[in-house]
Image 1 (spheres, rainbow, N blue to C red):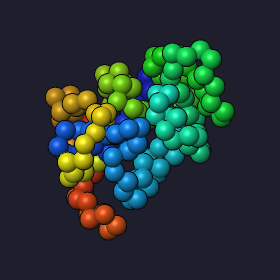
Image 2: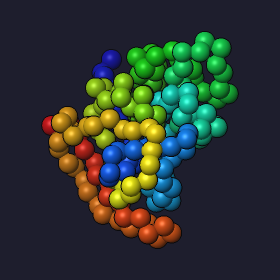
Image 3: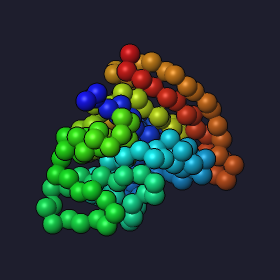
Length: 165
């Protein structure tokens, strides 16, 4: 079987790549959430337990795979596995394209397997307690860039798609 294509769709702050604080996303940009939905629709998505619990339900029209060391954890409508490797194996049996949905520790573990990053870099100095790992030495091929401003918040952000060089 061919190795699946693994991607991450994530919004980070420009200041220090923060992605969350207190179990919540740092920024809510409607167009960015729509982009996430459009890119991941119909594909397996892998979450850590804490990230899944912060959402509170499986995302529709995607196979949700939750990683946890707790053998008793149950999540209705989701697959539950004990490791990233098991999650990648299960997802790869379902589709040739897989998405990693977070959080910080799962991103860190998954980055060596990732082929493509769909980044949203938000011009914000919001304080976070969860951070995205530094990708810049491994992902140097930019395939898309669009600068935008959120109409509701006035936040400036840039969509950048990156691939391994």
